[in-house]
Amino acid sequence: MSEQKIQAPKGVSEYVPERSKSFEFVRNALIEPAKRAGYQLIELPVFEDTELFRRGVGESTDVVSKEMYTFEDRGGRSITLRPEGTAGVMRAVIEHGLDRGQLPVKLWYAGQFFRAERPQAGRFRQFYQVGIEAIGLDDPAIDAEVIAIADAGFKSLGLSKYRLEITSLGDLASRAAHRVELSKFIETLDLDEATAERAKLNPLRLFDDKREEMKEAMLGAPLLMDYLNEESLQHFKSVMKYLDQMEIAYVLNSRMVRGLDYYTGTTFEFVHELLGAQSGIGGGGRYDGLMQALGGQALSGIGFGLGIDRVLLAAEAEGIISQESFVSDLYIIPLGDTAKEMALKIAKDLRSAGKTVEIAFGDRGLKGSMKAADKTGASYVVVLGESELESSVVELKRMKTGESSSVKIASLLQYL
RNA sequence: GUGGACGUAGCUCAGCUGGUAGAGCACCCGGUUGUGGUCCGGGAUGUCGCGGGUUCGAGCCCCGUCGUUCACCCCA
Image (cartoon, rainbow, N blue to C red; front, side, top):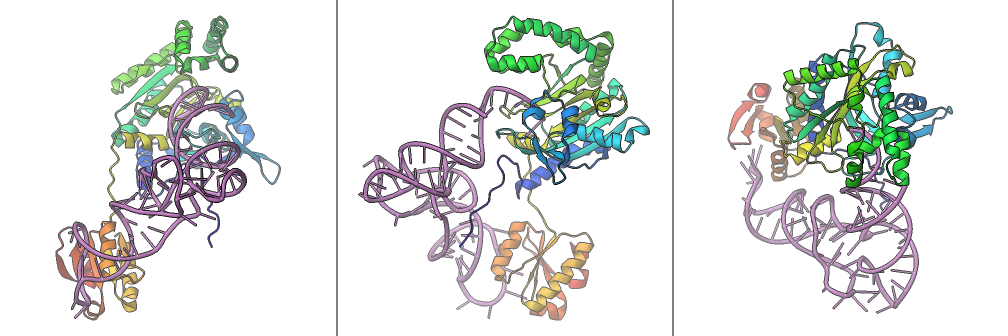
């Protein structure tokens, strides 16, 4: 009698063969450009002190106010499953004094993140991100490079149906000035309760409303871009200039909104055309006050987070994920127990020489084993039976052509 | 959190106005002794998501629940 089945928790994304191969491929492709630009791995815990996100991400954000997995551990501490990566990285940078050496500190990470949202296409409660952070310098060239690294990852996968949107949120002074004007404007609007509530929390949010009537109403709203001070404006112009020079296409979106409080200055988002409502495949920006807010020095930084799940979805939507199957070099079919012992030994030796070798287990018939070998896509197959054991010579069969040749077991390696 | 759709074998789905389940693919075995991909034959598989209710009787109707999915919201 079987017990009741246990299912995965609601809304998690998980990857099993064959698709796990595509996931691995996408993840590595997104990491590679960061490595080539000199970013180094930082491996962090998936849970942190809840306070880190309250202060780092911001109490007023949806992420912190209603989407965090927070619980008390056995010592009565408030723990939260990380909903994003930047805060944790900053915490670790401060804790380990990484910012005491040469700047910028350049780090990359990859892993799972958690947000208790209603699941939807491309939106999961546990999801995967690849991210980088460049901390300590305010050079606009770094902004451009960070963006270029994300873009390089998408391009190396062959993605083309996406666009890069950029804007500048300016510094604190610019934002404060704009916020006053924007709030005044919003007061002239006739809003429903929920929307008014959102406006109170963060008036910029209204730029993101998807309803046509709201888009129209916001048409005349004052734009933050027009309130940037000279320094912010120059910085942003430089970023655009560098992007132009690298021939990275972008569109200026002065109505872009980001949901995390720490963003300042250069802010960007990659949007894929084929994905539906959850179309952001990556995003990031500069954060001026974050490190200080977490008890560190007053250093600026910039980084991004790329959604592996969504990039995979996008790649599948564009039909550019190659489903080349797992291929082993050699498939050994042992007939009988002595042969099985021999097979294990041969496999072990060839593997230590770098070959991918599989063995037919379970004493199934030769025909079945051949079928199994065929399915794995093995390049070569060898049958180990009485005569082979006696002569120490096997028929090395090349699966593609069906041809085979006699090879000494001892010298198998040089024929693979 | 709010609203809509959906939930039948591993996968994709069929199942007429309620009468206790089927196809294709996949899987396993075989087609004379030890060689795959085609073909032929045979076979296993489901408490019809779960729990209640209506009914003589429910995969089909009703309620609840869990899950998936789409949109809002939010974001990767």
